[in-house]
Length: 168
Length: 232
Image (cartoon, rainbow over all chains, first blue to last red; front, side, top):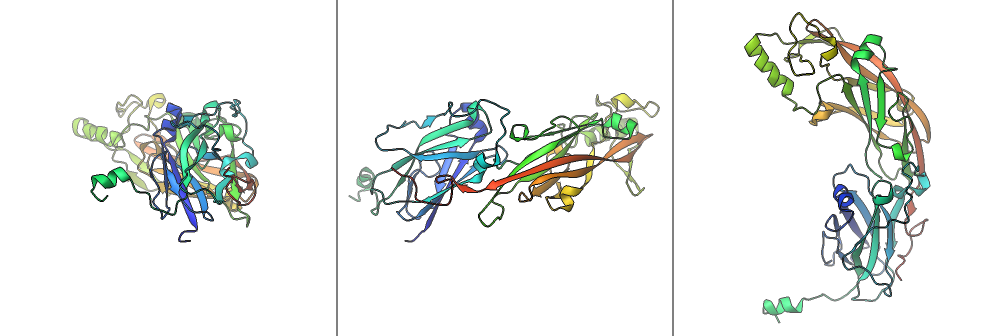
């Protein structure tokens, strides 16, 4: 394996995301995979990776001052429909009590999001829901469904593009 | 959530100078009200700091603590940095006023090259000394000492900044979040009182506390160590 670890970095414009109550266009995700991932720097990043690699997700607030942390990453089962437009916000699971104190153990900053990619089907994007927590309260939790991982050992060519360039 | 922590120190300068004490004339606020800090807006603030550690007990992320003085009794700090200077230059030219002076803690006197204004942006005349509407020089933190510093819980230092509301200086410290407990620290604050056309320092102190908590860094997928990604 050429690369044992793939870093996926997430940058969020927190103030704008909270104002819009949406992560659409307010999230920039990029990875350092040596294989060509698609849609770098967007909320539709499809990270090209290989089974056995460790993937590590990190998050940064664009202005460095607003609080943001990864609350959850869950892989969406193929049988479940997902929202192409990506953006939902999770309201029910968050305590509405603004004065609730975050216990050290429940602190999302004390969670590291990394894991080893298992043996998956090639050429198929595995979508995951990224849930972020920015501050506290009912409106602080935002999700996005359009990120994915993909394993393929072959190079993807855009046939139409090749035809245009007269290479095909 | 990896944001920096800021403690705002609001000083009622006129009252503090009159009483020669900050005790009833200081209001402390931090940005962690919803994260366990107590005593917001009072003179007894306990800032709650949450930290994390890896399996070898090394610190997993940084916590930065900043202190900023806010003055009750000065022209707003959001005015452009050279407001006083440019107003003063007009006054020196038109009205032939002299620049104010400042006495340093070691007794030396320096030219401030500004003309003190009142809260309306108007110059004070030589005869009147409008204590209530005088625009005081901003309070400055000259040191941070005490148990929290001696025990190595916080490592404070003074930094320069171009940001206007910090008036050129601010104090900042990283926190050793491995040291669980409640620690006191002392803020050494210098106010300036006015005598004729000279500013004279008044050194006062005030105590505040930080409470440090920590928890082990866990893997978000397994709640323990690293494992296989849960892809279905």
